[in-house]
Length: 249
Image (cartoon, rainbow, N blue to C red; front, side):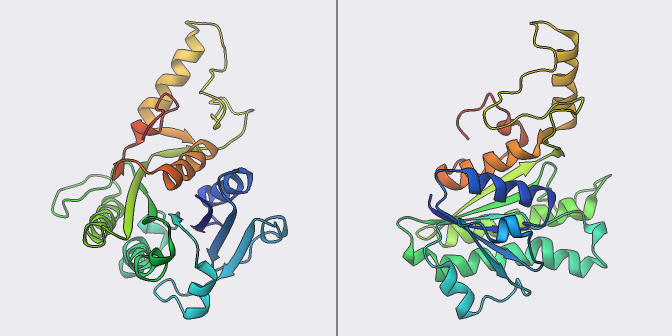
């Protein structure tokens, strides 16, 4: 992996992905598509090009020209449907935006890649493909995530010679702060417990809580997303596969 596209860089996870990309030796340059300006320490970094882009249902020639040579995209735009003014807007952001981007990149950028263009889509742990299934929490968001997954993977099937799609179903995020009670892991920190003695009750409780709640440190997930963008993996990568004991995805 050399040049990469990142979206959602103003969000909690997107910021972490940008930071990991800057520190990664496998990323030569990160192109950030964003509606809002980014802090100067990011926007002025030599490995970063910020492209202020308002309409994610349109990619004009001047934008695509800047993105030529990119081999992958990590899509971090999203959130709960409740944060949007209405269902139609939520569907456009959560479903239409990533599908349109992947379709555009498959046509406009993939021919210039050494291999297939890879689109890494950040989904949710409980995304639901069956739009008629009764759900008891976060129903609209889960339906939309599932619909986006379906459409993206269908797109990859149609464009199998140009496009690869990896769906990453992440759970809740922990801040990358060693002072937290549930200390998050990093790419070089294989989930060491707060109390390191083998069999420690604190270590067992911490591990159990993380597993049951589906929690992962934001920097760990950011690192894993970059790993998927570089190396690929299964079409759908579940939360359990993001644990530090997993060497291959």
